[in-house]
Length: 514
Image (cartoon, rainbow, N blue to C red):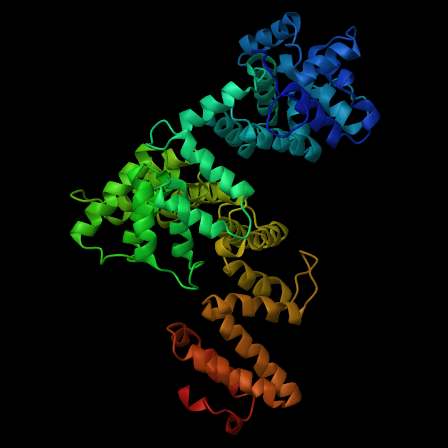
């Protein structure tokens, strides 16, 4: 069968010469200086190769020529003792990016220049993101690149990326046979057949308004995908408007019998969260059974949850172990599981090792996980383990809000309202915007953040002072009533007393509470 090759210059999933050239051109100030051929000349120090040959190398129709690979083998063999051998390539890239010809610099001068060169940094970050998307790139390599970026080792980072692109990147093959083999490998540790997957996918792609009815038909055949799907619908309340955990457990159990990884993991989760059972010893043993089963059939979420179990002492017949918890979180992180990096950050934060905590929170934030983004925003705002940077704090708080509602951390809304919109921020260039502050405080309050109710109370006290409108008086009473029923009330009671003295007490039905 004829092999079908994937082009290596038209997507973000291949750390290839083609995508390298594409990224350089994207960041170049003058695009006319950044043709594929010009970039190739820069990388290999030649000026006698045809445009069509370079294009074939970039697409992947031809492997990069032996004479050019040999140059990078020499670089690789001598770089550690003499890193300046790669200076000419770096300097050439800077010239292409900036659209000017740089004079020769000493090695130290070049290192200093690229440390502060924002476009060069952006190019490296773009290549790092492509590397993360490339399934042929190992987690060890991407971790190494991330570590070097964090330490501002831009020279070494670019060297390692180009060595991989020139010497290690292989032309990926895409054939029907490879697709089938890939699916069979995924299902290898399960009792699920390819035909069961095929039936479910056909239903998802071809069915219309009778989807649930058709899904139930597959459930009768004990199709694990259909059972999981119905189970999740019961779990989230999509079937009846409210969750039915016993029902979802019954469906998940059928899928779990065929080693459906997420079904196994969710059964364990329901037990740990007391959605089913009361966390008795028998329940714990049952949860552990499904959790280990989920791990054995490839669930990364299960690996992370095992870490949590060791941290909380939920492993049957074993003591708490922070060491084992860290081991499992690291293992889940190797598969880019963002919640594992958050968990590691929390551990080191509790140990007051804020440098390590920030490092792990930043990993989650750079994957745009909402909780981690909010946390990184706090670290930048307060200058914890990093230089205080209000603009970056604002950026990460906002990133935290740009996710689906079911995974959104609403503290970000509170922080944006409190730190930026309530009074404005000259450093971040944010003008006061009381309406936006109220909107964000309400979003935070709606999700149980009582500090937001406190801030809203202060705002409406000021509004009532200005207008004497009953609307604001009613709001004050409403929020006081909510606050009085929560523990946070003890923290804010004195401040509320002081603030309420600014208006006439006779207007307040709930003054007696404070």
